[in-house]
Every structure is written in structure tokens, then in C-alpha cells.
Length: 150
Ligand SMILES: [Zn+2]
Image (cartoon, rainbow, N blue to C red; front, side, top):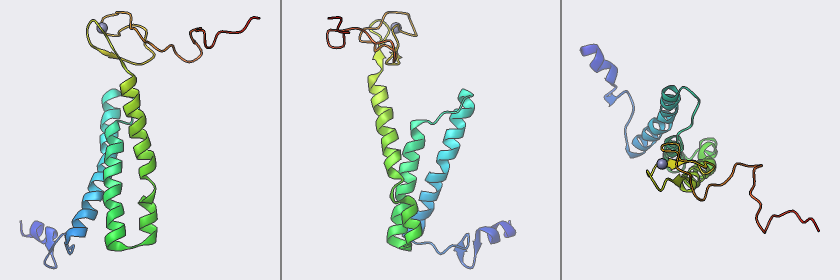
């Protein structure tokens, strides 16, 4: 018990770290940013295929935001600042694309189950879905895109 206490508290500080508000922000950023890898791994193990859940991008955005503010306000280190200055762009883009993809899903009029935008029938009950977008390369001929035979 005494050695554990010595391990956690030495030099009068928890884990030997001099704690302040920015140390808390920095370590919280580390924790959030690092946790995304385990979230992604969990979903991949659960589904038995490699997946990147949307929570991965939210954790990336939050963690890198905390680390960027730590780098900007506390460390004022150009290398550290540059490491997180632009990573938010693909994080936000992935979140936006995921949101648009979810919005494009079709809800079954009979059972309410959501199906992918390209589905022609409900995967839960088999009811034909209205407004289904055909997969790429299987376009429907309309007045607008009809081949001109003239
Ligand atoms: Zn259905």
C-alpha cells in the first residue's frame, strides 16, 4: 500500500506532475484522443470487419481541440501547434458526410425501418421503398437524361 502511494504521489505531486488547469486540459485531450482508437477497435471486433464509427471522428475532434488549445495557450510550441492545427478539417468533413448519408436513408412506410439510400426494398419487411436511388451505373431514364435518338 505504501509503495502504491509512493507510485501515485511523489515529489508532492500526483504522478509526479505539477498540476494546473492547462495540465488538466492537456491530459484530458490525451485521454479523449487516445480513447478513439479503442472505440474503433471495439466496433471492429464487434462487427468482425474494419469499421470507423462516427464516434471516432467526434473523439478525434474533441481530443485534438483540447490538445490544440493546450499547445496554443500553454506550451506555445510551433511543432505541437502545427500537429493539431488542421486535423479538424477531415474530422468535420467525415462527420458531415456521415450525417448526410444518414439523412439520405429511406424509412419504410410499413414498418419504419431505415434502409440505405440505394435499397429498393425494406431489409426488414420487404416492402418496396419509394424514392429509392438506383445504384451507380443503373440510372433511370427520365426526360432530363434520355438519350437523344434524333
Ligand atoms: Zn419495412
